[in-house]
Image (cartoon, rainbow, N blue to C red; front, side, top):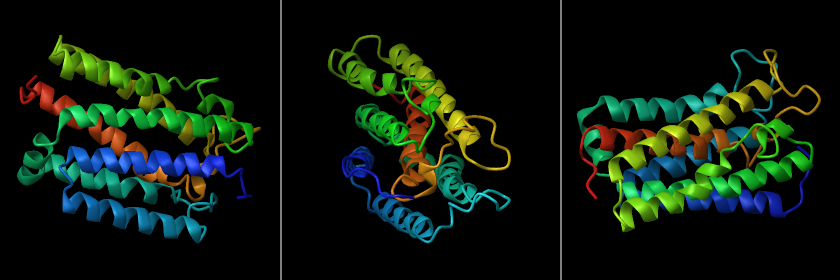
Amino acid sequence: MEQLPFYIPALFIAALLLTLFFLFKATRFSRTIAWLSLTWLFVSGMLAFNGFYSDVSSMPPHMLFAVLPPLALMAFAFASKRGRGFIDAIDPGTLTLLHLVRIPVELVLLFLFLEKKVPRIMTFEGNNLDILSGISAPVIYYLVFVRKKYARRTLLVWNILCLLLLLNIVITAILAVPYPFQQLAFDQPNQAVLYLPYIWLPAFIVPVVFFSHLVLMRQIMRGRFKV
């Protein structure tokens, strides 16, 4: 992919580092999480650097190999007793603030649209309202963890709504990638996520955000959430 203005990858890397910070802090700087995260970022980054994900003619789509490993790891964590114990010990307040990363991510998508690397429907000018999750995150944190008002119900409803917003942009993004099954944005497809550093959006940032929703919803529904 042709070189873009410096501020776009710089802002994206800042969003990635912010995601790592909140994830590490929420898991009390777990060495296992640090090792898994950094290893996966390296592996997926090297694959992107060598053009693996940018091959849009191969079937199954190579993008699957960016999203399946983190999803498989999540499934293992929720399926195993040790994994569930680890999940239930994650700090819910920090996980809530983690969604602040959705603000710089949405700004990056807007800038990528202006550079004709993603379609308009993937931005908050189009069909993507995911930025609302990031904007509302500190408000929810304040109400639930500082003021301690309407804790369970407020956090549960917010997580469900934000999860729906996330699924909306994920589906839109998939259908806009220039694969044989592309259904959207033929005039300006979703190309950026096939290259570094933006491959880390579907390979890392989105799975972490998705994971945080699942963790919080599990903690709430099992009554482990105490504020």
